Amino acid sequence: MAVDQAKRITLSDIGKEPFRLFFPGGVLAGILGVSLWPLHFSGLTSLYPGQAHARIMAYGLFGGFIFGFLGTAMPRMLSAPPLGVGNVLALFGLHLSMVAAFAMQKLIWGDSLFLALLCFFAVLMFRRARHRRDTPPPGFALVGLAFLCVSAGTALAVIQPGSDEGSAYWVSLQRLLSYQGFVLLPILGIGPFILPRFFGLPSSHDFPESLSPRVAWKKKAALALGAGGLILASFFMEVEGWFRAAHGVRFGTIVLYLALEFPFSLAPKFRNAFGAALHIAFAALVSGFIVIALWPAFRVSLLHLTLIGGFAVITFTVATRVVFGHSGNLEKLRGRNGWMLIAVGLMLLGMATRISGDFWPKIMVSHYSWGAVIWIAGVLVWSCFVLPKVLRADDE
Image (cartoon, rainbow, N blue to C red):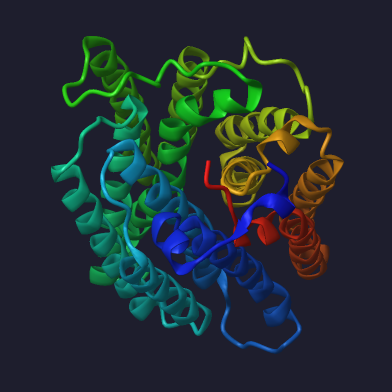
């Protein structure tokens, strides 16, 4: 079905497919989050944006895509009713309010709103799980672990708002649970189910509809939780000061899990822009951890390899598949889509510019600012080709 044959969405479609609100909201949050740096260095804002930037990117950008994807996919996977318009609008209102609070440097307000958003979303999912007629893919056990991580991290932020020496341990743990656990674990959990679709491959996490998990399902869920447990253990190693060992464990766990559960060996190599983007993104994700293990003194800067080159590129690539698939444009994924490579290239250039600012202090201000501008340009290219399609619905 071509895009002009698809119908315009209605409020009912938003209730069934909340990604239509949350994906654009996540994009706006991401643009706002990186804009805090040039705004600060130009003198338009006075407060240093470090923590506000991190929270907006983790909870606003990535959170927007996570809530949009799960809010759309989970009811379908459970064969349960959709969230409904009222619930989606309430969730989205909490998301927007949270981003606005962080942008105004009201961190406690923003953390509290995000905690409310997490709790409300969890209640909605729990109600649907009680009436489910199917079992979600086994990797989604990591999604549940991610929500436990970020809920604990956000609660720590509300309880321990300071960053003094006595609370440094808890502040560090909060950031790891919230900024990495919240995004990394869903990528590992959802990836084996959805990524094979990019290459026309069957997913080993796609089981026949059943209320009772099969033995094979339980084995894959146990493997996923085992990988999640090792990643969680590496967070505690890092807050104890074992930076090299922590990132080494994270790197080894992720590489092994990718080798076992992701069908990269069967996928056509760089068949089109989306295949290339996924290969580049996963390479950046794991390389960020290994270079930090080698040079832990630059861990804050080098982590952007994982956060921007890995997490963000994977997020935008998967979001493209979701939007195209729900707007009658699925066939277009098989084209060359050179615009996607331009968007990803700009995002990676912005990331490299940002990282370089920490290695040469004399250029830090300009490279932080130009890195933000270049990354935003990449996001705008992606948005021009993808976001208009959220206004179209495909009945199929």
